[in-house]
Length: 175
Image (tube, rainbow, N blue to C red):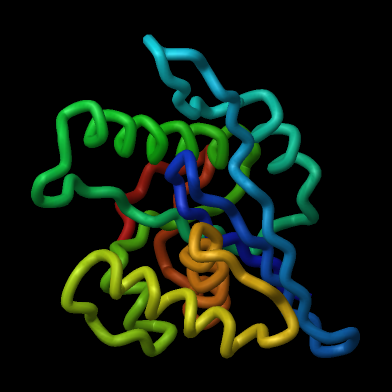
């Protein structure tokens, strides 16, 4: 049996555990990223809840490999949004390291290629393509758009055992 995690590090993202078990069948479990709603001015914003995230990661069975999606600034993205994106990716990397879960930072184009998703024209259509691929792979599950990246990242991790992983004992660069 092998267990893989796929992680979409955004505050609206999730992580998915994909268990590949030839004897008992494969299984998929999706976890929302734990967040706390904080009042900011007249509105509310999501913030990562680190303690529950660590608890969820520590409760996982031994993980073969986790794929953490690399984050980059997108055209037109504001400064605060870019900071939040980088903060989330760093937070996930720290939590995976603290839990001694081997992981690879993987570029979106790379994991999408691994699972057979063509390059999209724009961000929104790319998200829709990923959701469609996830729903086709797991037709018995209702997979929301916000969870699709995590699901297909876990599938990609199961398809390719990356030679360089980050753990608490190494700091090698991802492919």
